Length: 291
Image (cartoon, rainbow, N blue to C red; front, top):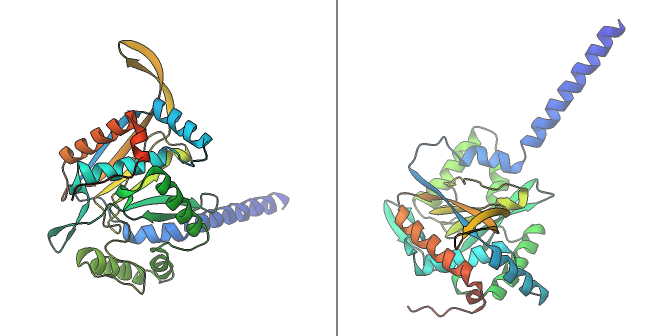
């Protein structure tokens, strides 16, 4: 009898464990992703580039000593934004009603982990290509603070709406919102979503959660032509001027909408970023672009 009671308790604990795991897995973000993503079927471009950030890290440490709160994420945000403006404006566009629509400014969405890493949201920096490094630092810090307070996230209202709708109505509502905003370009201000909700491209810092390399998903709901992942920094043996030396290396990965861009534009963009990393002090200046 004692044996059967013990077995019964073990089964109850196992059931409770799986119920708890299922509840944890089906958080708000996972419920939303289950309706915005579909099985892979469309043509996309995936690529990655390894950058030497030895001098850039020294530059960041020196500027932080003066009170400028920046990280590698700030450097890549600004370098990518200016690179798109100068070298690859084709990336700053999206498809609407069968036509490619060009954006007027480079707006960046940065994914941010909240609640001890259990919740995912994004903050957007509009007109990032026209900012200096200090201006970007101030703007980004303010946006992240607002996100932590539950403010300033355009997608929050639509997320809260979708996750509360029973399945399968949830899928139909998400498809309707995507059809109106992405396919037809109709903004829905009462939900806080529009074709520009996520800006020009998405950037995620996967290095902050310990991943060296990550290949991003090109989220259909975001209406962006590029999603970029920033990996972690590691020390590697690298050949420099014929000598094997330790260098600080990072891998940047990207997924791109092949309807809008080709590998050629991405190559120009990453070459621009590579030049900036050799001279990061140019990011401290406010650029003056020729119209």
